[in-house]
Image (cartoon, rainbow, N blue to C red; front, side, top):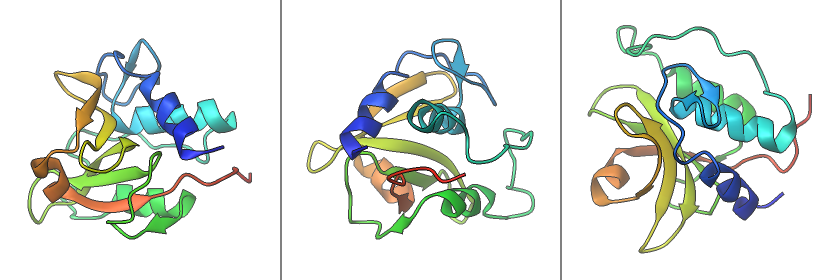
Length: 147
């Protein structure tokens, strides 16, 4: 499996409507749902169960739940060592927890990523300066999933 395989798989989710906590291609997904679905498409199953979460999850406690969960299943990378297929995490507000993620599909000056967010569904978006400023972590998909 290559980063291009991951990016192509992520792109296959574009057009899926936004549905909080969902992970069904074409029917509904949130940002974590896209990652879960791509993982299932590539490995056949998810690495662990995902607990129920609210839209403001982790904010009141200030806990890095998403960052911690992703780091359990994917190797971390230097933030600037971008590669196609990387998972990128974002803080949507300064001093808040990382609670949004996407999958990088293009690197370099025309960098892009696939993600889902309310009001837009699953889209492929330019990694514009506002997104770059919010990016706080980068992970690589494992070459293979070990259960």
